[in-house]
Image (tube, rainbow, N blue to C red; front, top):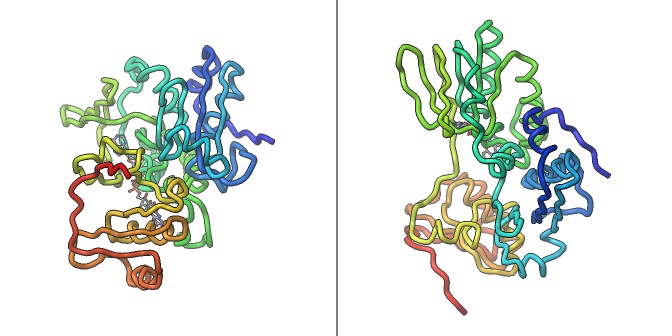
Length: 327
Ligand SMILES: Cc1cc2nc3c(=O)[nH]c(=O)nc-3n(C[C@H](O)[C@H](O)[C@H](O)COP(=O)(O)OP(=O)(O)OC[C@H]3O[C@@H](n4cnc5c(N)ncnc54)[C@H](O)[C@@H]3O)c2cc1C
């Protein structure tokens, strides 16, 4: 059964999808359970699968086959998939998280700069669509200011988070669910939300001018940068070459693809140790590589790691290179 909620998809995206020629996609996601619902709250990473579900509902020319990685390991191996979600049409189409807006842009090319020509001048332009950017937008509009919010990935880091347990007044929530609520809330104010657009430059002229990747320029009297944080690359040889082909950044979803393998986690901070502990439950053995003499992670995680038989921590080791060893 499909439950569809289209309210958060902008009209121009829907119109663009409705007119598409025949496209066949095969998306692979490590998802538990037999059914996928478009709004299933327990599913986080496979947003992309949900995006394709929505596309197929909007346009019968678009077909999409979802291969459940956990259930069909043979198919996953045969296709050489080492990271989820991976989407192929004939070739690899995309790998990793992507919003429906980003997928449409990938199909159609960048949105035309002309589409931003009539934005006028904002009182406040916020760059960033995470919790900080949305809070700023709400406060600004409540003061009666003409407010724009520009985000490459609306929702920010929170949508990478499965379980959130430290928000006061809420025992437990999930990242995508929380940011859907935030989006609904921000939209109840008069905020001009511009999604899936990357700011590539900002200059103070008579006004503040923010340049987008497609060449459009947005003008504002003031700007608030709420750019948050991103996964940090370690920039060593092989990282780019083996990205999503053995080098991955999401232990929750890619972990099951390394079942029964010896794996390494680089970094012994909280994220690194949390990932290592999760992975120790799935894989044969996990080695944590920490370049500092001490781990930076919380004591409670270090204690848990010490009690985990198939987890080894190496300190004072800097990772220099990724390469393939043919066994
Ligand atoms: C895996 C994970 C789990 C976490 N779990 C928790 C938790 O359980 N509890 C908790 O309190 N915190 C948690 N955090 C931390 C929390 O998500 C962050 O503290 C929070 O998201 C920061 O909010 P922010 O708005 O400052 O930035 P972000 O959420 O990072 O948002 C930044 C925004 O800026 C946009 N942006 C950046 N550069 C540009 C540009 N050039 N052009 C356009 N847009 C741009 C991004 O697309 C994004 O929309 C977790 C983080 C991660 C990664």
